Length: 232
Image: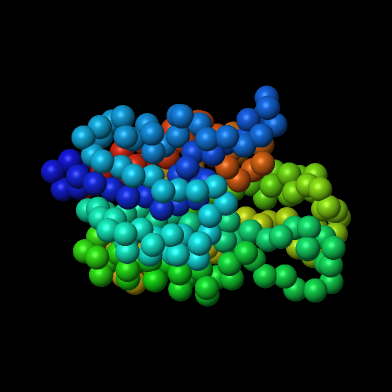
């Protein structure tokens, strides 16, 4: 990869930011042992600019990416990783009114449009877009997590969901949308999801919230990046 790509930009959310939940402090924090940092140490001659942000969605990233390109940002390739926040819901609102339909933070059609727009903008600037899908989450763990959020009644959320596994399937649908987009545009796809699905106890690679990778999970993701780079 060193002979092909010298500069990489990354736009993502907390997954590529390396955010974990610290059970000692009871707070989220960015770990220095995140996949991007570990990868950077292996490929030290590659210039990697990580623009990932906690809580970022595809529409927010689209606006940030456009501003960066207007200011002259350039790279050989840009990795785009989104969907985890886009597919999520405002659980307090769901809990407050479980009788009505609620939309995710970014409805799937809008999410796909934003991803396409970012791909198109990068292509116009002669930057190679690279997409990644999403690691699996745990419906049970995340449901327990949101049930303890302020202003959230777990029973009412479950009434609206009907089935806890909807949480997993919702996130999976966004991951599949990314895979489909990569296929349609003939773009490189880093398959982050499959290595975790092959692990029987993949939940042990998640933080207590059931959605963020812990440091073990970040290490698995780094190995996936490394294998992808070695095959380039």
